Image (cartoon, rainbow, N blue to C red; front, side, top):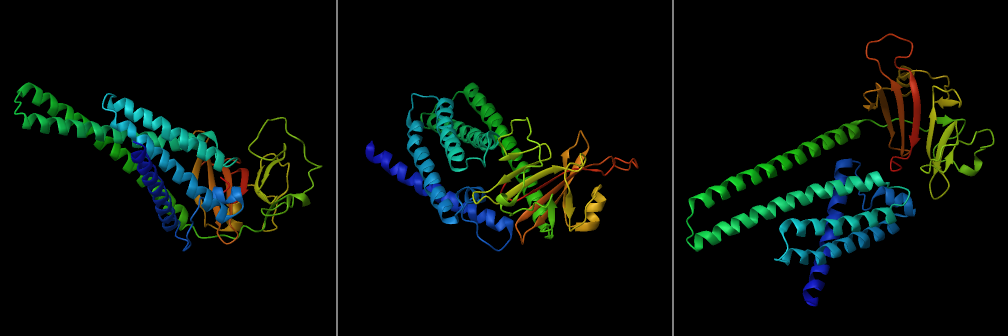
Length: 337
């Protein structure tokens, strides 16, 4: 038994590492920058070193693979139902992944991200469970044929159950393909946006990459809201830094006029049309909140590794003064979010 568990653990580690690097290759190809990204950019940001991130990811995912491999012994417990086996293995896998994400990506991955990963894992396990149900039905039918059991009623029930289960599998796979296709299309559209120069966007003279020790916070009002997402929280702006104390995120509002926002040395920008005139039309447009009719234009500076998101009101063809009016701006390193 110990030997079998060791083999399962080793094979699980190898498979985990293989899957990790396979995903890195696929992601690098999808990003189409000509560079290889061996580790998650959020983890690189967290550790401050590509090598450290690779080592953590290598052993972290490898250990998860080992645990999942060893715990696969659950599926050999014939006295347990397939549903119980699948749920138990899913719980073990979810706990491992959640611990890894929260420890390795501290301050970079929130509960929502963990739930997203677990949600994807849940769909995978549902497919696995249905597949195992079908496999069991197939084996039972083969055994029945060998034993020359000919019962038309049982045979009809088996066929009906198999038809229903296969229908569920096709439905779930269809949904997965649809979601994946749409995500890929959106990613390709975002990658097709040409780079813009965002190096001259400042808020009260503060820019991305600036040493935070040079920023004077005395003129800002400390906010009463408890927001742990950012290191510096004021009524006028929110600001965060990386592990080298360089500014990595800036948020401020246009509609409150509490800060001086300059874009290419031009201030008093009021509408999204003004942004287009200054930065050009190389942006990705998407809804921020459809119900509130809020859209945003996203600009990418792939040379300086900066992203700027401008959120504005869009009333369609309405000619009112508030239509196309800017609400707020977010400037950040692309791996920050």
